[in-house]
Picture 1 (cartoon, rainbow, N blue to C red):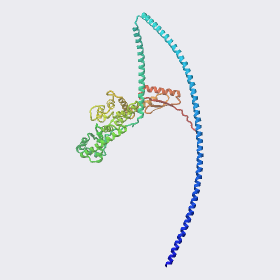
Picture 2 (picture 1 turned 180 degrees about the vertical axis):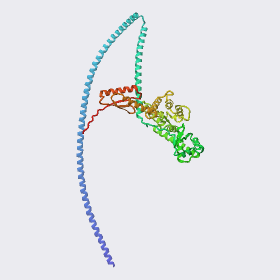
Picture 3 (picture 1 turned 90 degrees about the vertical axis):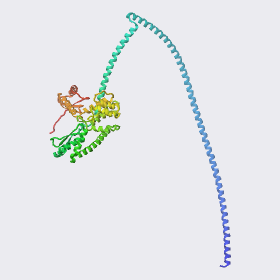
Amino acid sequence: MNGLDIVFGVVGLLVGLVVAFIYIKTFSQNLIARSRAESEQIKENAVKEAQNKAKEIELSAKQQQMKLKENFERDLESSRNELRTLEQRLSKREDTLDRKLDTLSVKEKHLDDLEEKLSKREKTAAAKEQQLDQMLKEQRDRLIQISNISADQAKEMLLRRIEDECRGEAGAIVQRITEQTQEEAKEKSRQIIIQAIQRYASEQTSDHTVSTVTIPSDDMKGRVIGREGRNIRSFEKATGVDVIIDDTPGVVVVSCFDPVRREVARISLERLVQDGRIHPARIEEIVATVSKEMEEELLKIGKEAIQEANLPNLPKPLVPMLGRLAYRTSYGQNVLRHSIEVAYLTQVMADELGLDGTLARRAGLLHDIGKAMDHEQEGGHPQIGMEFLRKFNESEAVLNACLAHHGDVPSTTPYTPLVMAADAISASRPGARRESLERYIKRLRELEDLATTFDGVRQAYAIQAGREVRVIVDAKLVDDKVSAKIARDIAKKIENEMTYPGEIKVTVMREVRSIEYAR
């Protein structure tokens, strides 16, 4: 490339730049002109819009002013109406006050007249009272002259007569109230006892401890005896019982006055027979194991009894003693079950009388606790049990219930008679004891036999533990009127010839049956 080409290139570039500058300048001027025109247009539009907005605001302000004026006029009219109403009320009240003032003035005048009349009556009454006193004085003096006695003597005679009359009437009233109270108390106590019996349900029979052990063969019986009797002597020494082995086949009798020791001996002998290894060392080992298990069993039974009686706060030494009662019987009745029954029955009666049911249940459960240790100490079980409970700071109600529940000493709390009643109920209920069950069955038979002695009676059934007897009569021989008479006669005969708790309901049933056969 030569220098001429460069010059031409530079010149061309300059010319392009000039042309471009001219074009840009022209475009800028046009753009500025358009912008000015647009800004003028926007300015004019803004002015117009501002004028329109000012007109709208002015119109709105005028409308608001009109509304405020209307509201003010409305409120003003309302206030004027209220003022008119208040003026009317005030006017009415003024009229009412005027009328009341007139009425008061009339009443005041009337009261003045009444006071004047009352004053006159008081003067008249005072004069009459004075006259009456004078007449009474004259009559008293005349009576004194006639009777020849003084006023004090006459007053004394009158008071004495009134006193005698009042004493007689008071005595009659006291006697009537006493008889009524005794009848109500008997009826209430009967109802409470019957309700307690009905609300508590227990087993009809009680288990007693078993004192015999089955021996499989005579050879095993010889092993129990041992050479020259050494095994049986070791067994008796370890257990403290007497083992009786006679000619009765397959049976060994364990005898002991302590039921717990007898039960330990029975279980130990059964295990020795099952094991087959019978010698003094083995006997001591088995007896020690069973004795430990028995202590645990007594604790378990005692805890179950406490839980059943709902008395969780008993002292711990009492727990195994309650367990011991489970192995003690009285006339075939388990003493622990008997104690739990007495606890519940005592609580039911105490609740009915408004006493402390928990304390009553505690006294009932512990009343025979002395039977758990009366084999080991001298004296009766009430005294033993009371002294044992006193060591644990039991309340006076529990101690007296334990000591006096057989009536040996007087009752000092209201809970003791309840425990005595519950004790009698539990011991005499049907099925509780062997001899009581026999008497119960005999009474039911007597009740049925008595009902069948009347003419027209076909059958009689004693139901509901002897509290009701249902009598079925012959409908051909007895009508409705005669059946009512039979029911009354049976009830009267039961009252005269039988002894029974509570009451016995007599129900006479008369049924007519017509039978035909279709052939």
